[in-house]
Image (cartoon, rainbow, N blue to C red):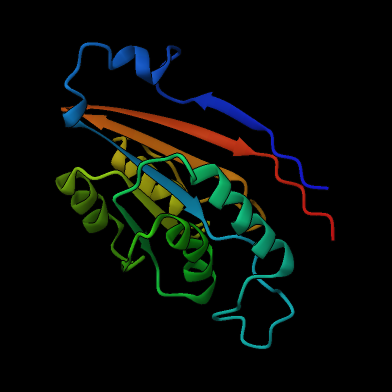
Length: 175
């Protein structure tokens, strides 16, 4: 049985993002979601680019449900099988193209995302997702453990204001 629990953790402010945006021009506001790829197949022979495991496929389908009603203009992913596969479930359901980015130049990507002012999803890795979220929100956030897959970072930007939320989904994969 699959269950999803969403816990909102406000990292910047104790009041909600929508309250802080009251009276702001909504055309100036955009949201960037950042996730790590779903579980990879640890038994696959080529560990430099393994596919998703069965649980990873289930988590990706579940993420598709999470993003169903989210307005996304573009989806960015690294060029690895596990990130492409995770992004594909969401991309196919929303008819968004996937744009590849270089995970070795997160500062360049953060500047591009802010300059484009688009609602975006970025699919990355345990050593890039938190770091990029921090760059976007002007905070210092590092990488996290490679066994964590349940984090969804949400960065809302309007004018010079930046808000960062961490959403933890307690997805349980029963095989």
